[in-house]
Image (cartoon, rainbow, N blue to C red; front, top):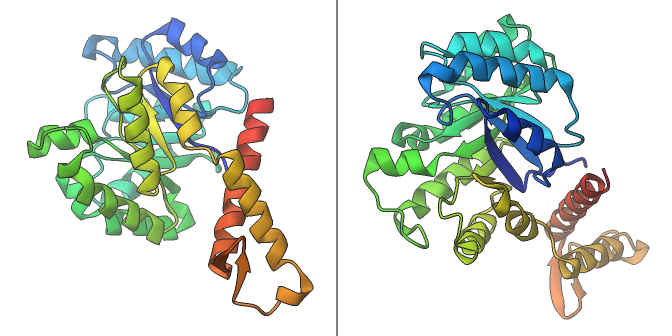
Length: 294
């Protein structure tokens, strides 16, 4: 079981050369070079060139490098994909995805542009239509040719489109968040939570990270490097969780438990499904340890 940690997913404006260089020193699991919202229209071409140069020059270690291009049907989308795809990002993030056809069309564009075989496709879920169609969008991941592997929630855009208020606890959005997670998990797609906008509110960030984690998300998108530490802490297994996971796996590997569907461990009844969950947690912990050692 192999995992790539995606606890902290930091947006960096593609137009800011200093930010692209600084990303090489940050503890974020994933860097998203942003060519869309973070870049003014008159800076799009220059940002595109800078991002491609950064991808080719390397120096980012184990960090996963993703580029958010402009929407494929925008005036910059095709040029973004044509330039970025052959430059070697780990994934290309497509904004404004609303249907399965959007995924298939983006894949055709990426492949025509010369993306390497291993390059993946990530999708922004940031409209009401995307939430309602999340099952059909996620279903495209059943076909490896779709390259789809990750959903990113665009909660700010969702709030803008629907008019819901972004209040602490996100009560107006909780049903939507759960719908997207369920759709993604049904088809093997990972889910990254939306951004938390108040850079100065570390406790508010922690609470929202904990909520996203408890909803089953894999990590959170961030808008400032100061948010990385909290995010990495919350989305990582604790030492106590790791120790208990090892105990579960070891117990089910004992010959006397080979045919047991459930056993008692530390006063709790543990089923085989918990052993599967424990193995997944240990694989994530190992991936995080490897990332930190790089």
